[in-house]
Every structure is written in structure tokens, then in C-alpha cells.
Image (tube, rainbow, N blue to C red; front, side, top):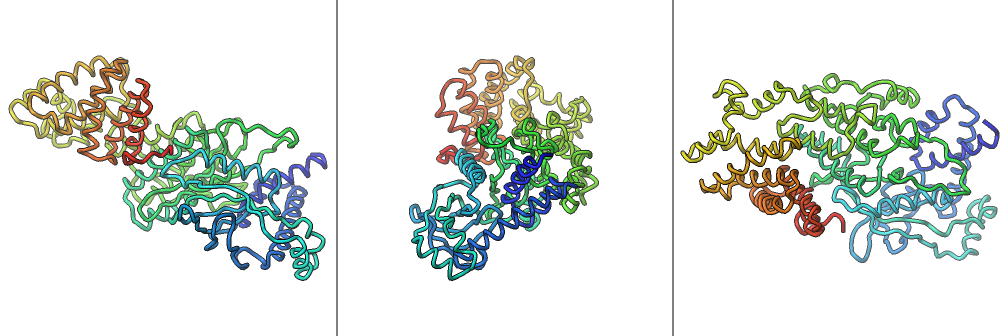
Length: 557
């Protein structure tokens, strides 16, 4: 490495270190510098100079640190009420906005670190946050630059009387503080919340499913988070998870590099126990939305077992990196104190696969398998052998299977003719419940295109018999409407599908509520149908219901 290239690399690492809290910088230097002591000394020298400059800035402002000096009265239009934290690049205050009246978190970049590179990162964070409007993400409200209203002569005289170094640097006294205001989240890390509330397995997985929805939304808006971990996922007092800190996020489209900026070198940013192998390798061409899927898998793993997938949180950075790159996660059945269902372990294992091509390709796929697991349905990561499907069915319908003697006979009970006869004679108990479960399974499982004609032939006469038997307003009838509507939609009969999907979904909203997973699934089919019929308003309405929002709430606005 040439002398000039060495200093370029040191500058790159210095700027990366400045974006981290002081306690995390040593790990960055350990993994990036390795045995290059000269490079480490250069970065440490730059950090020392920055620390001295920061002390000088703090002295000019009247105190040695943000935690000790008096709070500023105002920054921009915001009245400062408290200090939330201080990191490498700046300070986060609790503040009050006057109009509208609300409490906010105000992130302010330190003036002496407002280099062109730092400002580009700051502006990118603001721009990416501005794309996102989702109930599981802390919202950005405003961004601007605060100009200090202190006469230059007063600043110089204060500096001269306060510190001997001040006159030499007084001309460089920063008077502009870039900031942005965002939603103030009062909560605790997701793992702490789960432990404190003693959440059961289903409740923990429901949190992950909601996070999958939020992260998938960010991906569709062109944003990759790249630092998903319990500390950046807070759960508020009402049990709602919120994703924070998009400081190292990037757009899915490649950001153009300034012509006057030297070629970027690889710098690992993130938290190793939750980072995918390709993110650790730092190859720009490999980093995409599947890095976030890996991180969600790691958070899910920790929620279930109480430890990180590789158990490297207390390992030296270089060893931790090598371990993640060379080994698969510890099997959940070994890491957890309680037995982990085999299907669930396979789901999390797929999300954490070392090869991004072998992971779930979207958060929707990950969430769908978790939904199937919670519903007792076959999951996509396990081969769908006849024995596996029969076993899953038997687990869901133990009474029917015991009565019939075998899973195949239980399935036979669900034929149209037998259900029809049962309805005519008022014997609805077991057949009714089993048929309802099969209809739900049809809504969650992906239907093979070759089976669509049979689906239509199966559900159509059954729907007619339900109406004749007087069960037109029953939840089962609503499920069958949606199942038939989905089959018609998959067959390309969109216009015929719409009234069935709308009617069935509306009744499920009334009967089972917007938080029910089957209701959400039905709403998603209604939204797809409206999209295909070029009705964006109806599609938007159903999309809101598909993520469990009240009708009047729109996450896009």
C-alpha cells in the first residue's frame, strides 16, 4: 500500500469510526486494521485529533461534554427538554415541537464533523427515512440546519478567555448544526420486552411477523436497513415494535459516487452477530435486501433461544467474523433451554442460510412460513410428502382422525357429497370445523396452477349448498367465498372473482376482526384483484386491512 493510499484508507476508517459510539470503535479497528499497526496508528491519531477538537468545541460552548454542559434552549423550531444520547457523529435530544404540539427525538450532527462525506451520509439518512411511512417504523418529521446566533467577536473573546487553544481555532467555530426530528419512541429492546413480559412462543413470532411486514415495506420503497438488531427494534408499552436507526441504511439502487471522491474501500459497518456473511465481506455487489432477511432470522433466533445464532457476541471481532463466515449457526435445539419445534427450526435456519440464494428471497416468504407454522399447516421448507401433510392434518384434527382411524379417511370426510349430506341433516360439528380449516389452508397455501379448475369445481357447488342450508352469513361461507374468489383470480377470471373476494373479506373483517391472519390474507387477495382491475383506491384500502390497520389509517400518507 502506497503512502498516499494508506492515508486514504485511514481517512475512510476514521469517518466510519466517527459514526459509531466510542465504545464500539475498538472493534471496528480490530477487524479492519488486523495486523496493520501503521494503519491502526494513523486512524487512532485522527481520532485523537478529533477528540481534542471536540473538547475545544465543547469548551467554547461552555462544558466538556453533552452530558455535562447545559442543554441548549432551542435548536431550530424545537425546544430542548432532555438528552437522549451522544454518539460518534452527534447528539440526540428530546425536544418539543410547537406546531403540531408533540415530543420528538432531535438528532444533531456535531459541527466539527460536518465534513462533506459526513454530510452526504447524514443527508442520505434523511432522504431514506423520508421515503418511509409505516406504523412499525419511527417516522421522520422534519430536517433543517440550525444557525447559532452568536456574534463572532463574542465567540472569539469567550474562546480566548476560556482556553489557550481557542484563539487559533476561533475562526473555524461552527455556527451551523444540521438536524432532523423524528418520532420519539419510549420502549425497550425487543428481546428485553419479550423476557420482561414472559411472552409465549406465538407472541414472539407475531412480533417477527410484524417486523417482516415493516422491513418488506422498506424494501419495496427501496431502503435496506443493514443494522437490524434488538437494540434498534424497540417495543413500546402497547406491545408495538418500532424500527430505529437508519444510520448505515442504503438504497436498493446504487448511489452515484462523486467525481472528486476517492474510490471507496470496503469498511464493515453493522453488528457482527446479526450480519450476513456477504455484509461482513463488504462486497457492494452482494449487499441487498437479503441481508435484512438474515438479520431478522438472527433476531428471531435470539427471541426463541435467548442467544445469538453463532454465540460470538463476546468473541474478539476478527475471530467472530471468521466464525460467521466459516460456520453455520448453532442448531436451535442445542441453544434453547426448551424444545424447539422442528418446522420452526427449519424456518429460522433458512432465513439464516450462509448463501443468500438459499434464504427466503423476500420478507413476505419468511412471514408466510411463520404464519403456516402458527396455523399448524405444512411449511415450505419441509418437503411436502404425503406422510408429512397427513401428519400436519392429523395434528389439526385429532378428533376427526381418531374417529376415522386414519388421516386419509379424515380427508375423505371433507368431500363435497358428505358435507352436503351432513348439512341437510344438521350434522355440522366436526365436518363444519374441518371444512373451515381446509378453507383457511387454501387461503394460506399457494395453489398449484394445474389445480385451479378443480378448486373451482370443488368450491362452487359447496357454496350453493351452504346458501340452501341457510349458512350464507356464517364465517365458513365467507371463507368459501374467498377460496372460490382466489381460485377464479388465479384462473384469470378477475371480474368474476371480485364480488366473491370483496363479500367474503368484508364479512371476515366483521366476524373475525382486522387482526386475524386469515382476514389479512383475504384482504390481500381483494387488493390484488383491485390492482388487476386498475382500481388503485380500492387496492390501497384493502392493503391497509391486509396489514391490520384501521380503515381510516394509511401508512403511505
